[in-house]
Length: 197
Ligand code: GLN
Image (cartoon, rainbow, N blue to C red; front, side, top):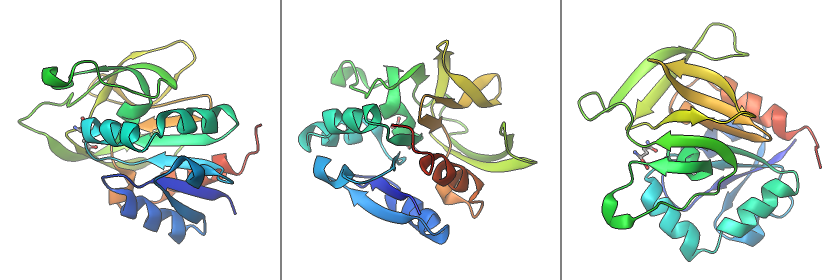
């Protein structure tokens, strides 16, 4: 079975861990660069991306995660984790200046793209490659407002891209770990089983 890490600095990492374990994957909580050794994939969970970015700096994780991807590792970011993967981040609180990110996905991501009035909702989403619909939980979710040439859109909602993938990088604006539907975790586990480096 593939070994999968879950970035465990902040946010909904325990829920990801439970979903992966229910599928038989071996799970490691990642807090240090050395925790990435021997892993095939890494999930960046939802939470608060400004806080997570600050902790990434504090724990010196930016370069180890980029190196992990460059060496063939698979990444999946959900919500705040998707923001961390993106090249350009819009909508960060102005007092923090430009928000740091991993720049592993050629997209522009807009934080809190669905507004304050309906900041959390669940919707049945059509996802390319899945039968039927997926119960997608959006919580102050971002959207991908610019999608680069090599990036494939797997799902859209209200005219905005909400799930994308590129080279060994998957990103979803919603929270699959907060539902009982494990099909997207199963998809990621399968992708991680493909040795590509
Ligand atoms: N709005 C949060 C952010 O911009 C993300 C919310 C989430 O991960 N559920 O970081």
